[in-house]
Length: 331
Ligand SMILES: Cc1cc2nc3c(=O)[nH]c(=O)nc-3n(C[C@H](O)[C@H](O)[C@H](O)COP(=O)(O)OP(=O)(O)OC[C@H]3O[C@@H](n4cnc5c(N)ncnc54)[C@H](O)[C@@H]3O)c2cc1C
Image (cartoon, rainbow, N blue to C red; front, side):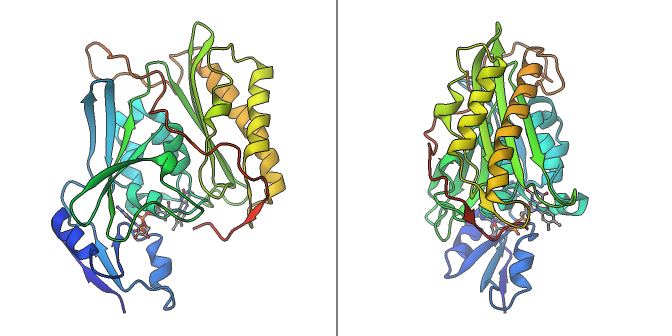
């Protein structure tokens, strides 16, 4: 039997989460599987629905430019349809709009898709390519901000401690002219999760790559990016040979999973193929910054130049084992 708490403030929610075995409940599209299974049923759930302010999307001015703050209870549908997200972060709008179906997107939340730590899910990969950070509140009211690149210490795990809660996801606004692309490679039905997800952000200035950030997920135990490989393109003309070299380096470095959607071996080849194609498409768009994936300012006034790369330069896993992992996954 699961006991539910329905707090109406963040403090009440944190107090309820401090009780042994208590966990947050958001859209419940994942938790529903646990609730249906007596052997996995959570003892205590704390509904976040009545906590004010957790579902807001806000653009905040910063010293370096602007950042988007997405409340943990914002639904996928909200993010996908939000005018500022569509204008300035089209990559995010696109990826949240492709999750599942309209019923799922109407209730599934940003906090849930990150905290769920299911490798097959798409949005964490796109958020990683945008250098997102996760704001976390703890039982004593302490707040910490964790780069998404450090949020998954191991497959299926997050850095969240018992009693902690995601409140906000922060995404710096990419520098003007930055282009984002996401490829969801699906091997089964359109409603299924991706067998592989590849997200790319790239900015070209005078024919030379000013910034590149790649992330791979869904076919890997957790979303990963290799900054040492990405930087092979920075300061250079992104010709076909260099793009292929980057795709090959990713295919060699990445650890893929074996599951019902695809074998690890096949996925490793698809990493090569889809990084090459996604990166080439993004580069083609970035040469023409009025392209459909280019964030366009919505508000009048001068555009404060943002950082050169769309996020802090946090260390990310480099290299890593190439042994295929077999994991249970999917939704
Ligand atoms: C039919 C179907 C199709 C789907 N297709 C796709 C797809 O194509 N692509 C894809 O990426 N995903 C897909 N999904 C998965 C979907 O993205 C997740 O189920 C959803 O995002 C989880 O969010 P939620 O709000 O429902 O989380 P919940 O089920 O409420 O919670 C999930 C986990 O996160 C924890 N949690 C929730 N909120 C917080 C918080 N703020 N802080 C800390 N912990 C928290 C909960 O305790 C729980 O452990 C699909 C799901 C379904 C049911």
